[in-house]
Image (tube, rainbow, N blue to C red; front, side):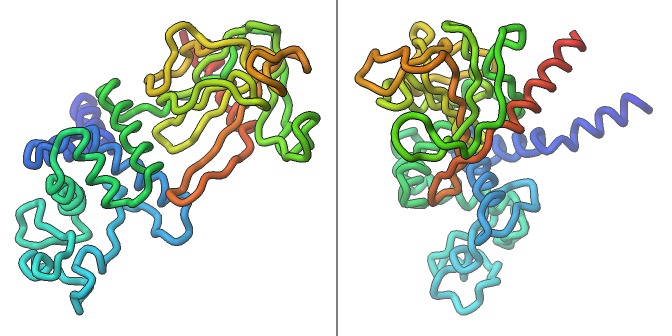
Amino acid sequence: MAVRDAQAAELQNPNDERMNLYKKVETVTHIPWYYLAAIDQYERNIRQVRRDLPKPNSLVGIYIPPEKWAGLANPNINEENPAIIQFFNGLGVDGDGDGKASLNSDEDVLYAVAHYLTGFGVDQDNIKIGLWNYYHRDKTVGIITGYAKIYRHFGRLDLDKRVFPLPLRSNHSYRSTWGDARGWGGRRMHEGTDIFAGYGVPVRATCYGIIEMKGWNKYGGWRIGIRDINNTYHYFAHLSGFAPNLHIGQVVEPGMVIGGVGSSGYGPPGTSGKFPPHLHYGMYKDNGITEWAFDPYPHLTRWKHLERWEMRKK
């Protein structure tokens, strides 16, 4: 009985159900499952932080407005007849074979997006063209293609693990510095947490993600930006340098060394030593329209506790 219950619980795992649905739609449309997963995750992310969109309450997080589903000229925005929807150039299609094109069907919604993309082609370049025509935002296309690369690399959906950015056994200290006045670079709010440690202490990726930015900034010095699948951008600044062969577009995982603690910044490339060595760690969220910073301190504290707990279990 216990084995049967465990099997039932496994079948009810939302990620397993989503993966089954992605691969089912991939079989029919030839849009790779990891692109479908990326679109679904992106939409779920922005719906969770936007007030003008309904919160996700079903397996698939994609939101298609009823008027877009039924066709902009359709007098009935609740139309479910696929033929009538097609007549009005709506996005709605029957994906599950029940004769209806329903916004209440996860399979219909996912199939509708995949069907739209097939009109442009099923290779990577044409999928990106299709995504741009659907969202009309370059950053959104970049985020979704980044998610797709992450999902394809790991081959699974459960990529929520987080770790502290420095090794737990390193000698470091930090406190909440969110909103403090900056000591350098003019009158700007401090958008992050400073973690003080010795020069060269390893800096680690805190999440599964993709490197979106790497290089020099006159304020941040040597810095790296990583975006995770929850649409959070993780910013690491004032590094002493980068790990070998690290590059933009590279997929990373929690605990992977990406650089070292330093004191770089506030000058031309290579300038360092104007302040004690530390890691400036920032977090930013994108909602499909704009991006804003939020306080990383409570997240850092939680990740540290979770990592310690995992180490004790081992």
